Length: 205
Image 1 (cartoon, rainbow, N blue to C red):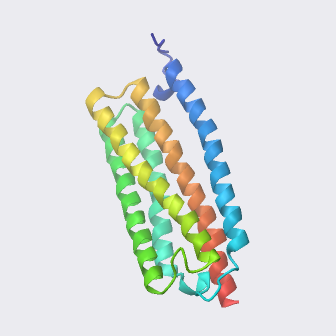
Image 2 (cartoon, rainbow, N blue to C red; image 1 turned 60 degrees about the horizontal axis):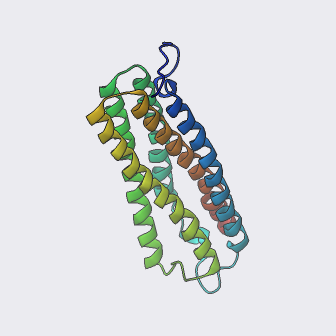
């Protein structure tokens, strides 16, 4: 049976042994995710110059859409942080408000990303166009798939909180999902700078 700590200075998600171990285990899992994305980034860098007969990468990138995507995802990281703050205040309503806001922003990000992919395909750039575009779609698509999973996962956790209340167990799940979400935001910053910005600079150069 779990031992609950009653130290009020200890965040709720750390007040059970299971919660602490799960959080530690998730940090280890994030290490594996870092290895995955590092491999995808490296592959993209090697392939980015091999455009064959297709358009160059930066040729099709649009600043406006990319800025909106970035704004949505980075703002969702902020609202996710507010959700954890409310959770630690035992404010379930505040937790739901900010976490649902996070999910809405995440869905908006995915909507723009799907629209972006459709436009690229219409312009003749798909995963089979060239090695460069293959690397692009695999890297950015993998990130998008992770965001999709994060939305589904957080939704499921919120349903658990609604049914069981805010306990050390459910709080640790919410906290772990927030770590995952922040990780995806960091990955997007690297994608935005090393893929999109670099592609546009090279294309204009």
